[in-house]
Length: 97
Image 1 (spheres, one colour):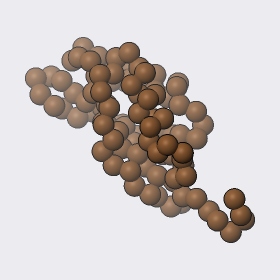
Image 2 (spheres, one colour; image 1 turned 180 degrees about the horizontal axis):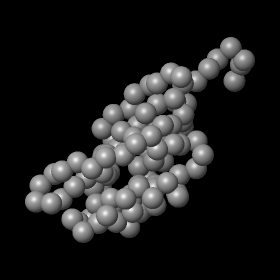
Image 3 (tube, helix red, strand yellow; image 1 turned 120 degrees about the vertical axis):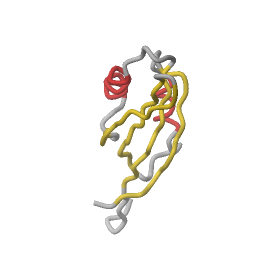
């Protein structure tokens, strides 16, 4: 990497679907935090009501723009959590600081 090039960062918006209504979404967030390394940072998270008491987790993660494999690593981390049923990437947007 030359001294003149600078990489930005991206915000990855993930929608994480738990295996059931009884799953505490805070537990998923905490486990996700434990599994990601320092190149990622959770900016915020929120619950999204789906139906009949079922809620999905929307997670906003800051990641390096030049990340090899795109969002695959983040998806695999989320899918490796036992309480997670499925993961969708809703948005990837470049941010500059």
